[in-house]
Image (tube, rainbow, N blue to C red; front, side, top):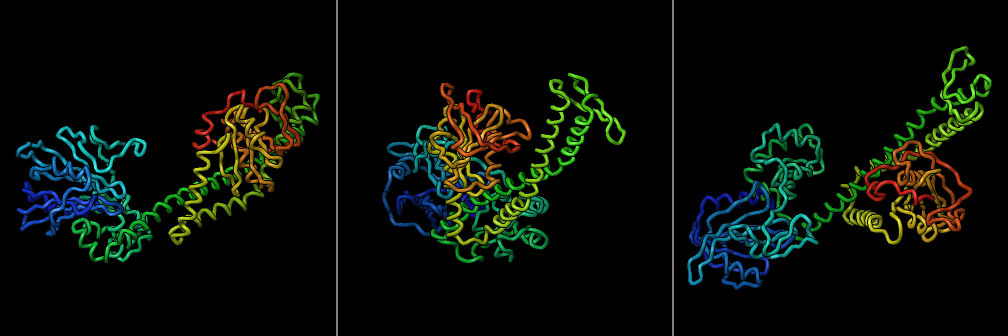
Length: 537
C-alpha cells in the first residue's frame, strides 16, 4: 500500500480518535480486523499483512467473530485490549503505529502500541510496550536476514530506514520541476514520498504521458501541475486509472523492476569500461609526438656520441637544424645505450598508438552496443529481461564466490580471468587451474599476481589480453604507475623453479604489452592492496 493512499485512509480515523472498539476478528492468519462500533455507524479497521499487497483499510464490513489463528494473534487479543487512543504515520512512510490504552478487567493490561509495517514482501506486525521494547512480532526477522535491524521479542524496536524524498503534499512547483526535469515518469516514485508503482501509473494515465517518457517541456508541466491534485485525492486518481493489478500482476511488475535494475547496472558498467578504454586509446594516440621526440633525441646521441661526457646526467647537443637540445641521461649508460633506451621507448609508444588505432572501431562498437542495450531495456519482453538478468547475476555471483583459488573476473567475450592473491594462490592458479593453451600473464620485473585467461582451447582476442594485463598490473607492486609492462605467454611455456619458494616460475616465448593498471574498487577490494614480494612470479 502506497504512503499517500495510507495517509488518505488514516485522516478521518485520526480525526475521530479516541474510539471504543470491539474484540479482534481474524479471517485468516495474516489478517486482523478491529471493529469500531461507535464510529459513524460502525466500521472495521482491516490490517492485512500478506505480501505482495499488504494494506490497511477502514470499511463498514466487519467479519463474523473468528478466533486467533496464530500465537501473535493471541497476543493481540490479550495485550491490545484497551481503547484506540492514537494513530500515527511518520511522513508518508508505509508504517503506522496504533496506540491502545490500558484496559481494566480481571487482569488489567498496560498500554501497548501496534506497529503495522506495510512494506511489500517485508510486511509485518509488532506489539511494543511503553518503552518500545518488542513484546511480540508476527514474523521474526534475525540478523542473518537483515543486517540493518532485528525484529524479535526483547529488543528495542528499530523502524525501517526513512526515505529522503519530497512530500508531494507540501512541495512547491519549483521544487517539483527541479526534481523531476529530465527523469522518466516511472522514476517519480524515487523522488516523491508516498508514491509507488500504482499511483505512478495513475499519474501517467491522468496526464496522458507514457511512464517511460522523459519529463521535459509539456510533459513536465502536465505532471508537475497534476501532482498536488494526486496528493489531495490519491484514491480517486487510482480509481480513475482503472482496476488495480491483482497479486499476480503485482509480482510480475516486481520481477520486471528487479531484472531491469540488474541489467541497467551491468550495461552501465560495460559502457563505463568502453569509455575508459577509449580514453586510454586516445591518450596513446596523443603520445605519438612524445615517441617522435624520443626518436630524434636517440638519433642525436647516435650521431654525436663523443659529445656526451662519461657519467653525465644531462648534456646539451646541437641538433641537425643548429638548435641546442638538452637531454636527460642515465649516467650509468654510455651514449649508445641511452640512445637504445630512447629507440625502445619510441617503438613502444608507436606500437601502442598503432594498436589503439586498430582497437578504436571495436571499442566504439562496444560503447555503441552498451548505449543501445541501455536504451532498449524497457522494450524487452519480460521473459527475455529476466533471462538476461539471471545470466548477469549468475556471472556476478560466480566472481564474488569463486570455486577454487584466486579471484575471478569475466573478461571481454566471456573469457574467465583468474588472479592469484598470494604466493600459494599464484602457484595454484598457474599449475592447478591453468591448462596448456590458457594465457598466462605477469607484470614485468616486479612482484605481482599470476593472471590466467582460461581459453578453453580458443584463441584469446587481443582486447581480452589487454583486460587481463590491466588486472596483472593492478594486482602488482606497479599498481600506482602508468604504462606498465606486462608479459604474457601460453601456460605451457611456464615452469616451476626447483628449490625456490611457491609462486616462483620461469617462462619463455613471452610477448609484452604496456597498459594502465586496473585500479577500480573491485580490483582493490579483491587484491587488498598489491601482493607481498613473496607472491612474485
